[in-house]
Length: 201
Length: 197
Image (cartoon, rainbow over all chains, first blue to last red; front, top):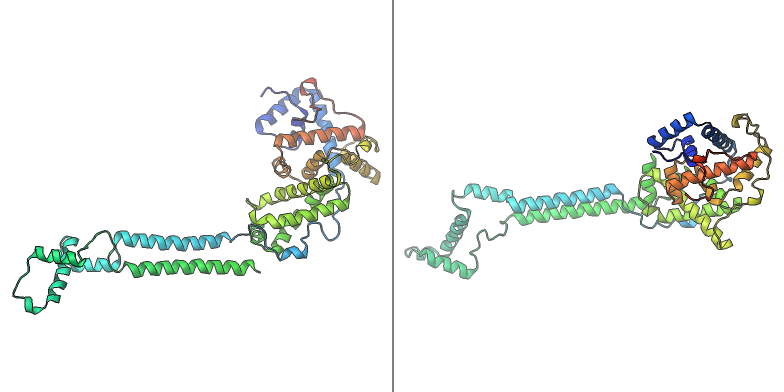
C-alpha cells in the first residue's frame, strides 16, 4: 500500500483499470500532491487528444475475408455439437443404468416367477424346479421307485445343470439388455447422422 | 441468434457463421494490423492471412464468444510479426521514429475537445503515434478500440502490468511529441524510462 504512485498507476487510473485498493491509494495521493495532479492532467489531455484522432478507415470490401477456396475445407478440430454429444451420452447412460439395474435387482419376469414360487430359499426353489423336470423326464414307469435326493443331485451335477444362483442373472435379462443396447446404438447413430447433415451444409 | 450460437456454428465448420463472427471485430483487427505494419496493403494482407489461420483453427478454439476478439487479435498480431520477419528479418520497429517529434505542436492549455481537429492536427497525431514503438502502437490501438487491459494482455500475450506500462509510456511519449513538454512526475513517482516493467 505504501508503494509510490507511478505514471503507470495514473494512466491506469484514467482508464479505470486499477484494483479498488490501489485506486484509493491514488486518490489519496492526488488529494495531497499537486505535482501528481499535474501529471494526471497531462496524461488525460494526451488520452483525450488521441481518442479524438480518426482511426484508419476500413478498405472497401472488408479485410478479414475467407478465400472461396478455403470455404470448402472444414476447420481443424471441427467438432460435434455439444447437444449431440449430450444426446448420445444420455442414451448410452440410460442403457447402461437399465442393464445394471436389471442385473443387480432382477428383471420384472424374475419377480413374477419368484412371487409364484413357494416361500422358500430361492436356491431351494430352483433345485425343486429342476427336480420336477428330471422326474418328468424319467417318466411314469419309474414312479414306483422313489429316488434318493443325494443320488439325484449327483446326477444333476453330472449333467451340468446344478447351477442355481451361481452369480449369473436369471433367464429374461438377455432380451432386455440386448434391446437397451440396440436402442443406445440407434440413438448414437442418429446423433452422428444429424451431425453430418448439419456440418456438411 | 447470439454470438455463442454463431461461434458454435463456426466451430462446426459453418463458413457463413465464421464470416459473421469476424465481421464483428473486423474494424479493431484492421486497426491493430495498421498499427503493426508499415502500409495499408501490408495490413490487408496480414488480415487476409489471419482470417485463413483463424478459420483453420477455430474448431479447436476453447472459451466463450467474449474471448473471440482477443483470440483473433492475437492471430492478426502473429501474422503481422511473421510478415515483418519474412521481409525484414527483424522484430517490428517504429514506423518512422525520426518524425515522431517533428509534427505540428499542439497547445496543451486547450482541452482536447477545444482543439480544432484539422487535417494538419490529425496528421500530427497520426505521425506521433507512428513514431511509437510497434508494441506500444499495438497496445494503444486495442485500447482505443475499447479492449480492457486483460483483453489486451490476452491478445498480445503479455502481462496486464505490461499493458498498463505500455499505455502510460505511449501517452508520455505522445505528450512530448505533440506539445514538446514532458510529463513531470514528483520524485516519488519517477517514470521507468527504460521501457521495462
